[in-house]
Image 1 (tube, rainbow, N blue to C red):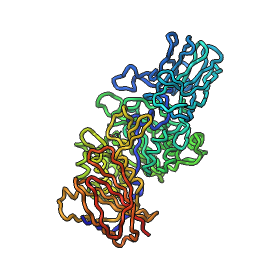
Image 2: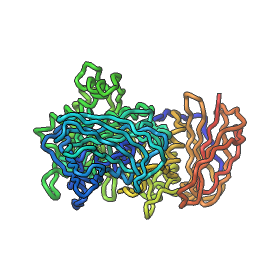
Image 3: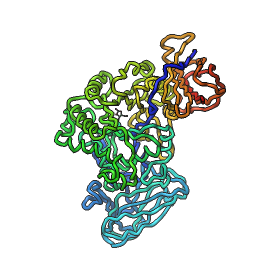
Length: 624
Ligand code: AHR
């Protein structure tokens, strides 16, 4: 093939194309990115969290008491906070036998690392109780120990530090009261001190670093379906997720588990800042998933109109929480949480893949108009609905046109073949209309693996997204995180367990794009010496320039089962260098383990290079 990159006809494109989608699906938050090691620390797990109401999933989940005469019950008579109603009452008769938590499939510890332990305690019998706090193994091995002296009849928080003497993956936490009698316990927490950037109540450093390594330009939060819930009562309300942990309001996660809200809006904004990514919160458009309402099977609905003014105010308050100065009500709360400076919020998404009905339109319009009036500097991102068989975006785009929405969110999970055959999807888009945020996409195959074939289909399609970077402003593959053994959705781009992070080949593609963004697109022309349209579609080329470094970035995808020799013509593009860095991701189609390799190749303004079968080559050339 001869690939000629044109020196004329370049266009400005978005330099924010690669971002990340975060949703608490597949245990992405509790037991995942959120570094808390204790499961059900607030005793708020509920039968109703799980479809089918699994009996073992209740306020006692993950906790057990040892000793024949010791008992552990759940009470709610006098809680620390009304949002955190349940707590444990431990009645100790046998001293030396304790109360323990198994963590999320065990607690992973590293030798020499420090762990912040805390709990709230209220003595119900004795005025003082000494508590031994231990991290132990299955056979009683002691990995760490400390003591706490609880000395009051009112709720009080106690802190201690534990240092592990061993690296293990299956520790448990034990609390051993040293006197007989009853004691109330709540918000029992264990955090590694080594969180991402050392933040308190922070994120698991290995997982957070893996996300940050993509160099995402933005991060979407909190979903996905989690943003709008599966009923009015399940809508995600940001105010429930900030402030002291014991006052946050946990809720059922529609993916079949529990959200403690420990990773809430403050932690999210902080993570964005720590990664240099723009926050992109998505709030419900006053309707839950599929406008599912509250009224039983098939009945559509949304937040009652009589409550919509309050809901609209909540959305405005979120912007004030992020950006308002410390003298504003919500800006003050941000400052109290430790961040007086604004978080510089620029985008707000309203709605997630909703059915575009009158119920939706009425509520969306209220929120949209209110944000536009009060915060004209914020780019509101609307939603054009789901894109599944039998649906398209017609109604969503009609509303976007009518309201003049600046950007809309499109989603599609499609087959590898669809991605190969629809590279012209955005070529046809009217440039005078709203910009696009491709908020969720992924290529799938039967069995839903994340392998070289799906990853290359995405890499190929992304060459067309760069070509259309004047209309597509942002794109985030979805979902991002998945815990082994707790995965509701495949494929994802980062799998993990308690001690390992397993980025996929699809992740590598995102990282290659995220680390090599440009802001100017240079058109190219591909001439094949032989081959038809079907062959042509399996080769993708995108060339961008990064104005800051002046680097030329060539992305070349070959989804053919044979290598393709290319002659790259880069005349008049200022190429004087005689070598360039090349990153190559290649493997057999079902490979799940291929890793990109970087080397230096000889180049000139007209050079030949081979694109191996099933490969993604990224060539970065320094120019003057
Ligand atoms: O990414 C998984 C789910 O797919 C999201 O929650 C939803 O928006 C979409 O249907």
